[in-house]
Every structure is written in C-alpha cells, then in structure tokens.
Amino acid sequence: QVQLVESGGGLVQTGGSLRVSCVASGSIFSINAMGWYRQAPGKQRELVAAITTGGRTNYADSVKGRFTISRDNAKNTVYLQMNSLKPEDTAVYYCNANVVPNGNSYGRNYWGQGTQVTVSS
Image 1 (cartoon, rainbow, N blue to C red):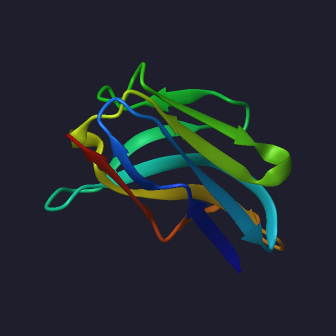
Image 2: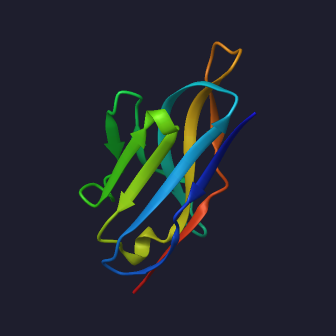
C-alpha cells in the first residue's frame, strides 16, 4: 500500500506565506510526477502545480509567481511554498502522486487526505 500524508496547512493573513508538505510512504518502487491540487467550497478540484521527477514544473496561471513547487526524491516528499497569499487561495489542498508500487510495472495516482489552507482578508 501507498500513503500520501500532507502537513503544513493553516490560517494566514492576506499577503502571508505558508508551506505545505506531502510525504509518500509504503511499498514504493518509484514516483513519477507529483503535484498539488486544491478544492474550494462549491468549486471543482483544480491543479495548482505539478513537478516531474526531473524537476520540470507547471503552474496554474492564478498562482504563477507566488507559489513554488519542489520535491526531494530521496525523501519521497513534495513541497508547495505559497507566498503573497490571497483570500481566493483558501481551499483544501490535496497532494497527488503517480506512484509505481513495488512489484508493478505501471504507475497509478494516489491522493492525500487534504490539508486546509485559509487566508483571511
């Protein structure tokens, strides 16, 4: 089994910063892309940022220049540094990873349980 566990969410004022982390653990052979999604109340889940094993990144237009995704392959961990936060960034942030479990040839997507980020105005 593979588990993704997020941490680091919380309450912050407009203009503040937060860093969320996600650790993948379990029966892992390798990890392909990792990313962060978010879902605000009444809205669909959306991609925030993603990063490949080699470090290539892509971002939602709404967070470009403010958020930075990074990963530590040795620790099976992905981070999202969020700066200049706005109230519209308020959402539950979910970690996603494409993981090849031990004994498998193909990756499959796994999700974390989510961490709440609230930005007050």
